[in-house]
Length: 95
Image (cartoon, rainbow, N blue to C red; front, side):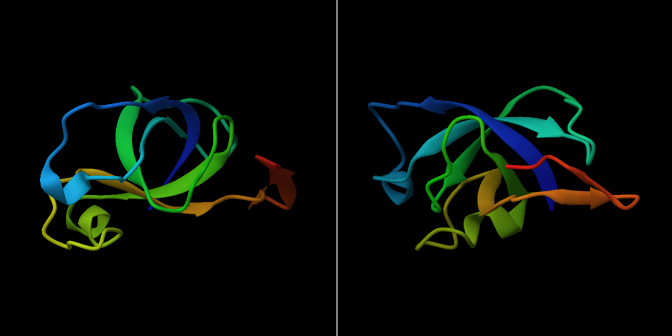
């Protein structure tokens, strides 16, 4: 599981049938202290996260399990919204 901030929403006029009506989000991966790491990625979002929210996402085979069709071709999926993180006894990434 990884942390990321939702930086935008994607709109696609043509999708694979298994992704019909499933929102796509741009995510900026984060470290536990909120620092951006790596390049933004695209993830399916079945929980309805919004821009600016910090989320937990999964990758690989687990990402497809977030969908009705567990054999859908996806690389990342949002599974939770983060309220805050505790790093060394200090709250970070507060909502």
